[in-house]
Image (tube, rainbow, N blue to C red):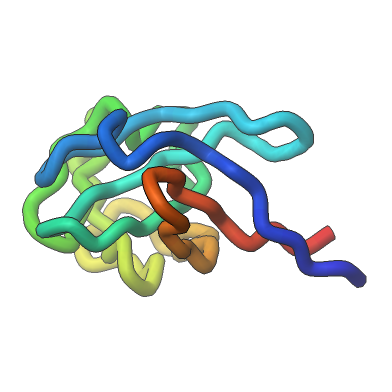
Length: 106
């Protein structure tokens, strides 16, 4: 298994309090969250239904799915409100200069 850091987006592409959808080559679509200047990333697909979390509502460290109102911690991926029962896949994130990068394990 190798671990590598992949560029996902620029810092200015995800304003504070917002979420953006990005499709880095070789990875599933990602949701990138900006929580008070701290960045987090997860798979963009809700674990309950085929909904894009990037179209949901970010409230602090919690993203709400636009389909059925399920809520997840963007920090840990844990479900904080049902109907989802499986957590989100969360990626380690670091910011280098103006670039948001995630660590992707293959």
